[in-house]
Length: 255
Length: 169
Image 1 (cartoon, rainbow over the protein chains, first blue to last red):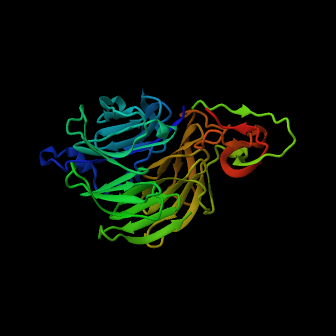
Image 2: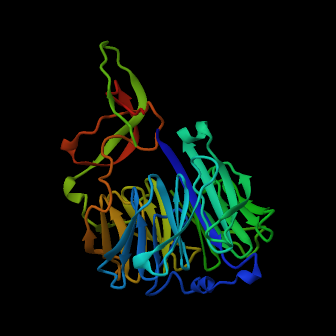
């Protein structure tokens, strides 16, 4: 049986619960993406760079390379995870691996010796989920044979204040959810041929769809320097979203 | 992924033409050759990555397109970096990490127009599938791959007459 599952996730730190302010949030500095540091990847990635280390997933493992000397990666650790691992995402000292039996969460403060924190398993099959700090948003997308089984196509909101015991807050049905991006109170969710949905997440218990982009296929998004970079089958699109109700298309490169 | 290729034997002489896929071959010598080429069209859209003024657009199994995004109102295609079998990249400083077939490569991009392989870690991944198109429905017809013609860098839609190969469970 072959199953194709797109999962993606994005994390919101210290947002809902003011008491939950974490030192991790300081690592989301504006300098990310430039100079000697790492760049910015999308939520569908199988590579992530954190703390001078490259974390990547192959078919079954998480591999960790020290890249203090960029040109000479040195493997410092590896971890057998599970079949069907799909994405890897880091935020601060936490690493999230999405697999088709859920999400594995690790503490990567010491990259050479990472610590297992928890495994979030959703009730359905084909449904990886993940998160960090206080709230995580995760898209579950089941395609191909998964769809006729019990495939989930939904957005999950997860309380992760207790990182060793993540709790689902709510789920929203979606058409074809894929990559996500987050900026302040706005969550951007790629929804395949249905375009992009934008939610006000001020109340994580009741997300409010405030805007969207229709007419294009949306696969993944990166929010950076106040510009929304969107990619899909049709092309690469950049938007200014200062006015969230009326996004301004800055440019496109059509494929 | 347990997909088996069935060989079908047609006893009749009637031509049976169906929509399917045919392999695109590349020379074996290019499989692990990282090089810059002129900008080109995106074949199969992959992931995106941002670094400094650049946007990198993955082209599944082929490499990455580099866009100069100094002015987001006027992004300019700069070049294409050929990295066969590629799905993911990440960049720290001036070094891009990329999966290239079964290897992980480190590519110096301090001169973006002249990306240069500086390191290669072999056998990080399973060897890529060379035998059938991925992400297609079961029962899809395709032209059987012929290793004599090089390695399969991708599959494109094509009309297949009397298909010898079908995807299945």
